[in-house]
Structures are given as C-alpha cells and as structure tokens.
Image 1 (cartoon, chains in turn red, green):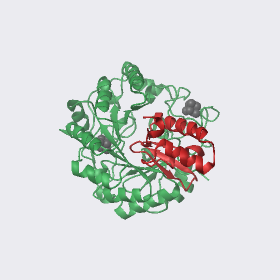
Image 2 (tube, chains in turn yellow, orange; image 1 turned 90 degrees about the vertical axis):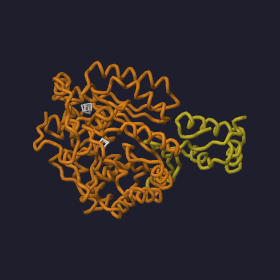
Image 3 (cartoon, helix red, strand yellow; image 1 turned 30 degrees about the horizontal axis):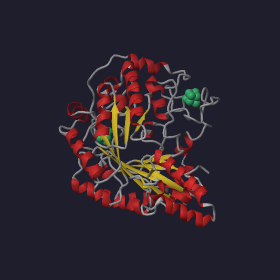
Image 4 (cartoon, protein in one colour; image 1 turned 180 degrees about the vertical axis):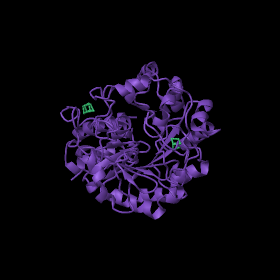
Length: 90
Length: 365
Ligand code: SF4
Ligand code: SF4
C-alpha cells in the first residue's frame, strides 16, 4: 500500500482542539501538550480516521490552490514526524 | 499578566485503601466531611477551563472512591478538558472501567509499588493489592485506554527496576514513569527507610539508559535522577505559579501538591475566590513566581529561568527557609545536607500513611 492510500489517525489518547484562551490549536496527549504550527494545524484538522493521506493532499491542494506534489511532500513529512512523536498513527 | 496554567491536579479525596509511606498527601489529611461537593468541583473545572487549563489530572488519595467521579469526568469532557485518572487501580472492575470509558476519560496512570506482590503489598500496606493492580492494568488496556505505568522507586525496591520496566512493557503501557520518592511530608518522615544508596542510583541510571534505547519509538520512559544525588535541582512544577495548579480535597489552591508544608504561607480556597483571581493576584502564588524573590546564588545564575531555583518545599524542609536556593543545587551553601542524608545510617522500618498516623510532633531530620 502506498503512503497516499493509508488513513492517518490520532494515536490513542491524543486529540486536537482549539485553545480559545491562548488563540490557536493544541494537540493534547498523555502528560503532554503540543502546539502545532499553522501548516500542521491545517493538516491535522483533516485527520478524521476516514480520509486517506492522498485525500488530505487533495483537499489542501484545492484549498490553497497549490501544486499537488509540493503539498504531498509537506503532508507526508509532517505526518511522519508526528508519528515519531507518538501523536499520529499512520 | 501571568500566562494561564496548562494543567490542574484535582485531588478529589485523601481517602485511599493503600498507605504508601512516601505518599505525596500531607501529614494532616482532609477528612471526607471536609471534601468539596460535586457542584463545587464542577464550578472549579468550569473556571479552570475558562482560565486556560487544558488538562485535568484526577488524583487523590484514590479518586475512584468519590461516588461522583463519573459526573466530574463527564463535566471535564463537556469542557473539552483532557482528563487523566491517577489511580492505584485496586478498586477497579470491568464494569467501572467501562463506565470510565463512557464518561469520556482520556488516559489512565496506574501506580505500582513494586514489580512483585511481596514488595508491592508490603510498601502499599494492602494485602493482595499488587494482584489487583495487575488485573486493573489488563482491564484498562482491554477498554482501549492509553496507559502510563508509574513506579515509585527507593532503596527497598530499586534492585527490581529491570523487572518493573519489563512489567510495564508486558502490560502494554505507552509510557513508564519511574519516579524517585520526593522527600517532604511522608517521604521525609520515612527518609532513612527509603533513600537509595549511591551505587543503586548509578545502576538505575544505566538500566534506564539501556531500556530507553531498546524501547525508543515504542514506549516512553520518564525518569529523572534524584535530587539527593544531583548537582543541580529540577525545575519544580515548571516554576512556582507558572504552569500548574493543585486543588486539595477541601478546596485549597496550591502551586504544587506539597506547598502546604510551607507553614508561613496561607493558601487561598476555591470557596472564597475564583481560580482566575487566585491565579492572577493571590499573594501566595505571587510569592515565588518568576525570579524577583531570589537571593544569591540563584539571582545572578544563568539557570534561574531553567530550574527556577529548584523546589521551595525542599528548600524549606531542609533549611527552614523557603526562599533559599534548593539544597539539591551544588551552589547552595546548604548542599552538604544532601550528602549527609546519603551518608546517614538506614533502617528498613517506616511509618505508614494513615489519617492521624503521623507522630504528634514531626521534627524534620
Ligand atoms: S501514594 Fe499510595 S497511599 Fe498515597 S494516594 Fe497513592 S496509592 Fe494512596
Ligand atoms: S544557583 Fe539557583 S538558579 Fe542556579 S542552578 Fe542552583 S538552584 Fe538553579
């Protein structure tokens, strides 16, 4: 299975939520809080346990009207990084 | 304006079926009749969420003893607060774990006293306790919760550190927390029975380093070399009044769970003020916030915003001055007390944590 066909999801016990008090979004995990940057937030908001990596890339390419392969490189790198940190399961 | 706290420790009750001699609860514990009621805890959580708290750690004593735990968890979920249950596990059943799941609990931290029954039941003071914890671990994992296994280590169980890590792995924990006893309150009372020997600490550091490498990317191990053996102190709670607040069963608001040992400070209560007022303006929270209160050597030290001068409770317990540099720091004029404690004769006897169990007058060693 290519990476674009996999369905990313948040690891058990990890969730994304808006932080209205500080402004922005946070990823809450066991004993940890991650503060993702804007790019990461745009990607993580599309992680819903149904969309594939390819689906996320399509949605972002449409939203930002950008070249699909550039977006794909970014999305895959970001998701792989968050997988190593234990926040995402690919 | 002081940035808002990230986390809140909600000590729902001091009641607990166990009696660990290093319990972080104060020597003078709150009785059940003094505990906040359900509505007060709900209000406190609402105020915490509005203030900016993101994670709530339900703790105790044993938090599952509170009959309204599920109501409080559901309230936390409604507020989008991340909830963590810190439990000894001995009260849990398949049904109660399922109910925790349904109430929206996010994560469980299960505490162990040892890797095996003999040591675990002895330290916890509850016959059959260790076996019940093993069952709890299985139920928690079967319900799909992420699990942190917490092991408190000291002279009488450090030899089994490799077994503890193996046990954490076997039960499917995502994190293993190896916490040295902290020596104030009950821990200080029992220091001669619990303080590790230097060679034990060296071995523990090596065991953890090896396990971390082996389990990297698969399981996280949280471990910090203990203060009595370090040259620089740890940052305590990320700094006084910077990231964290602790609510006691009766509603006192503290910058850290042992802060009530600082007998010259009066801590505010949720019964008298809102959490926002307390966090922003209470004099006890202001007292050791930031760096203005520091004297030398901290005042001009380049680590002052890294460790914030160490732990105020440890400074007070060991020097009698809460504004002193934490004696764990080699730059502290009182640093020799740490080495003296390490060199002191040891005993295996300890005083169990019981309501009313502390000697009438506790003289700091
Ligand atoms: S440390 Fe032991 S006695 Fe204290 S609350 Fe935890 S399980 Fe109970
Ligand atoms: S002198 Fe103070 S600030 Fe510097 S390392 Fe020691 S405790 Fe930390």
